[in-house]
Length: 105
Length: 464
Image (cartoon, rainbow over all chains, first blue to last red; front, side, top):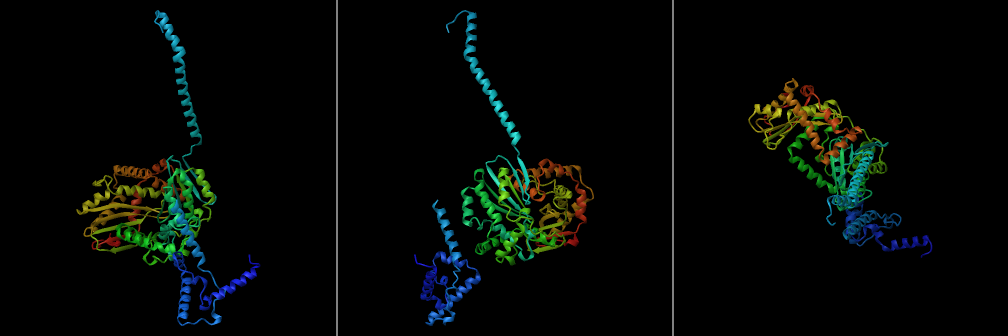
């Protein structure tokens, strides 16, 4: 077990920046692979959150086409990265598992 | 035994009687007596502990009523004073969506689980809305009551109204509205209430077109918060133990206490709404304000309704005892149908005549129908017609509560509005009112009217 929460936090921050999607202005949940559950969770997002997500994805696609990245002051910070899709995704997975449980009976 | 002399034969007979037959006879007699005693003790026990009908009012305001009918199936209902009259102007149509949202996810169970869980025990869940109450009914076999009560409590006290689930209901709202628009009766009656009242009771049972798809989760939650409070609820059970219902009521239905937002008093306005559709059959209803359901006049209006006639009592019969039919058949030879319309709410009511007639005869039909009520108002009512009407009213009431659905609704409505239940004898005794006075009230009252069809000869209110 890695010693110390501060050490772990430092590693996580380094890893987040090394991933590089924050340089395109994206959040972690913008990059998640859209399988069936994730598609359903995205479908359930409130309108404002969904619009923000679409904007970020569009901006990132545009930047990647132009082979550019954002200026450093606009990169998504580790602290600002909100896992907005998590509660919806958890709920979708819970419902699917419940359905599968009932199917087994 | 070897045959001997006569006296010895008699002795043999007596001998065999005492030692063989007598014990058997004794055993038979004893068994018979014991059985009678046992059944007597059971009967005594039943008399001592058997309460078929019980009503309790909890301190939170919740009224619990139960009727033990020894049926293998139980039927439980939750009535809430949250009908369409309690909708605000900003959220018209909330009750329609609420009616469709009974199967959606709640805090304790997901929509999938509610559906499958109820199906698994062979039960059913239904919602009925009137202008004043919402009734959630579940029925199932007696053994599965606890499973199904869990779902009922979840649905009535802890719905979540998730936005994506609500938006999935929009097509169902549209289907409901489409079906309602196909029926001229619904069209006319909704228009009647919209025309007759300024507020509350003028709200339609169906979602207005401009609100379809626009009702938000917040509006639904606000409506439930304001109206689904324990002071406005009644828990009714048929074939359920009263103690179980009481426990459920005390523990679970106390989430929102108090009496919620008081609804506004219905103000009768008296207007008319005409819907020109070009249909060859014209449906028209002319009413005046009658009386609240709990007032003494309400029974008189019901008697008057049966005097005038509520449709044929014999299938494919002529309906010749109906005063309305008699009067209208003098005015026209074309086919028609007429019945008296009577609807009572907690603070108001509507009474009048509903006619279905050919487009070119409508004027004569309506005038004859209203004229007949005026005739009765002047006292031209034979005693035989009056007693017939009273008997018909009693019979109709008693027949309707033969059905367990209607019985549940009847018990529930009484529990909700009065907090107690009147026995059948009490109700049938009340049906002894004179309809002449209330007929006068109809003739002199400000009228409202709604009509639908090809309205070329349909008179306006001031022409009747």
